[in-house]
Amino acid sequence: METICLDLEKYKGQHILLLKFKYSPALIQLVRQLPGARWSQSYKAFYTDYCPGIEKQVELLFKQVALINRTEFDQKLSGLKNSPAETKQRLIGEETALKIEKFRNWMKSRRYSESTIGTYTDALKTFLKFYATKALEEINNEDIVQFNNQYILANKLSVSFQNQVVNAVKLFFRTIQNKMIDVDLIHRPKRGHPLPNVLSKEEIKKILEAHTNIKHKVMLSLIYACGLRRSELLNLKPNNIDSNRGLLIIKEAKGNKDRIAPVSDKMISMLREYYKVYKPLNWLFEGQNRGEKYTAESLQNVLKQALTKTKNTKPVTLHWLRHSYATHLLESGTDLRYIQELLGHKSSKTTEIYTHVSTKSIQKIKSPFDDL
Image (cartoon, rainbow, N blue to C red; front, side):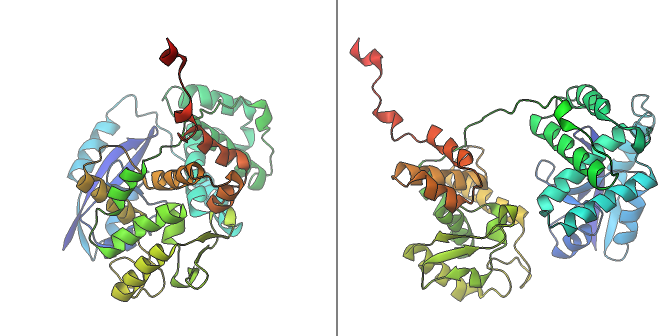
């Protein structure tokens, strides 16, 4: 019988319950039944928000299929209860928890993406835990300002998370509480403008050729060849490839928009080779269980293994392949408007950021230093 080790950690100032176990599709399927369960790349484990009694729920869920090791969890929980600083930790009440679930269901009904639903729900929980002793009807703009100062800034959390909280709180109060929070009166942090990370064509070539497994090779190649987001690749179905027209049809991408991307003969040839070997049923890329979608965690591991094989020590993510695709298109002379369409960007301003990392024109500039 499998063993699941429970552990208690902190994430963004809140306690989370970690579930550590060896890879098992059956256990992963059960874990996803826990409310808000998701994968942590940092801890290399699944986790869910900690609240008193959640460990008993876990034990009940896995009672027939796994042994539960609570050693680390019980030690940290004991220290938590005896810590004066933590005795004041506030927990969400049952009524508030029901409203959060109602908010989650509202977003589902409006077809928000799973990523947005998870992000907004987590941000809202963090905010409402901070004001667990205050009635929802009494929360106002000033409370958000106070939360930003006493929680976000105090814990040195990111600008992105601060904006996520503001957006989630605004939407929650408008849709569930029927109360308007005027975010225009709240000082939003200024966003930074980091440049996208781009790899050279030589680095891309090494990464794409690192794997001998045809599935792994095709997945990474298709992300770069068509500038796909991770979710877009995983949501592809066999009939999304129109080999006769040389097109990839990307359905319900970010913002629920469909788009098309050209697929070269070289990529079509690789896809046909892959298809002959694996013969996917429902999804173009399936996991170990036939008919089930390949997981985001496994795809990230495919890239990680490629980086190890090529001895690339850069903190490369799958999105770097998409950034590199756009930059290399720009450097080869492709019009920015076409790149915008290929990437599925709503605004041209988003696409224009690649002009700042394209080296084609910059390298032609002669420094006045050379004339000295």
